[in-house]
Length: 223
Image 1 (cartoon, rainbow, N blue to C red):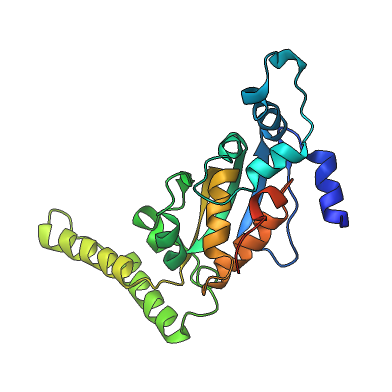
Image 2 (image 1 turned 90 degrees about the horizontal axis):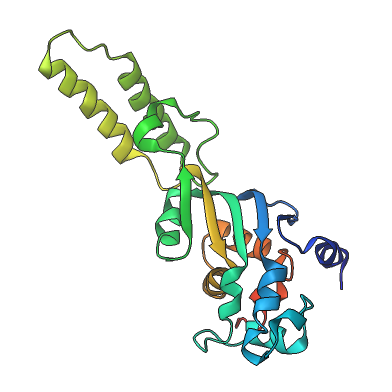
């Protein structure tokens, strides 16, 4: 057992802060809730007297968590709640939305604040500088345009300038959202994304590996 996992054993309780792998940029402010209680509740099916149950992780309960996807024995992992702030590109967010139990608590909004973002910090390293320069021009045009009082045409022009900025914003634009999910959903994500072409998905999966009892999520993942 390495030092990081040893630390997790000490803090693997409700409201447990989690560690981050070196170079992790996409996840921050992360906590885990309900791990110990979920371990205890996983023992309900074989218990006649639940008052005698404890929160120790037995081999049997661990094996349930590590079952293959779709078998259903890992249901108890849904009780282990994970909350964190996640910074992803537009491209990765589109893919993240496919996960039903990957819930957005709140997020930054390009619809509301597109003209206020710092263009020097908002794009990942794969966005062409020429595209960023175009975005600067469009944001500048919007911010400097003055609507003529009482002019519908002028107001429409202002709205169109904003839409131009929104629709031309590239896939490498990054925003942060507050997320809530659970260990069972992370188990699915890990299997599907750990070797993904997008580097931010691979980085996210490396973070999953560092969660308290992360081996329950990552065990038996193919590839």
